[in-house]
Image (tube, rainbow, N blue to C red):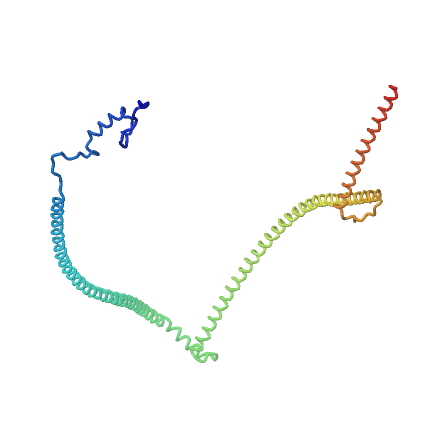
Length: 338
């Protein structure tokens, strides 16, 4: 039986899994590339037997063992040289540490000596400046005393005639006992005059200060009065504004009170009307009213129910009346026909 459909697949994977007619070009292209295609060996090549593979592996193993022994020997020699270098480094580190400690101690000693020397130099410099100032002061005092001595000698020489006059006054006077007594009394009079002059100056200064204080107090009082007048005017304006504001708020309050009163009155009237309607409805039903005046919600519910009932009754009455009118109309029409 012939096939109805041609072969559409080849036994390959990838882009060659197409119809044979369309896959020929891709197959030829794949045969020409060398990257993903491994060519089989020629038919006359001997190939690698197990013995050759063993020999090749044995040679590679021997080469690797020789290389490992060389590397182990190199590592041992490197370890020995490294241990020698480490011991030498430790020794150098110890020596440098000792040297560092010695140099550090020396530097600390030098710093301490420098600080002590600077402190000593500062103290000596301060003492030198102080002594220089004292020397200058003493020189100035000596020069002033020398000048004072010369002036005093000249003064004594100038006042020698007055001393003779004072001695003559003491000899001829019965009041003074000695020259010193006369001089003391003169000094007392001069001191009294000086004291009187000082007190006069103090009193004049006090009077001037009192005058200045009075002027200051007067100015402050005037400023205070002016400020009080300004405050009084401002208070008067504030009072007028407050009075106008009070009048406005009194009117608003009166209106509010009237509104509240009207609201209370309307509320009372509404409550009275509700209660009266409730009583009338109860009276209509021949019932005694059980609800109080303040039970508004219950009264309104009762009134609502009664009014709804009355509305239904009214509707029913209207319906019955219309039905009676219709029957009467039809009966009259029937009588007219007969």
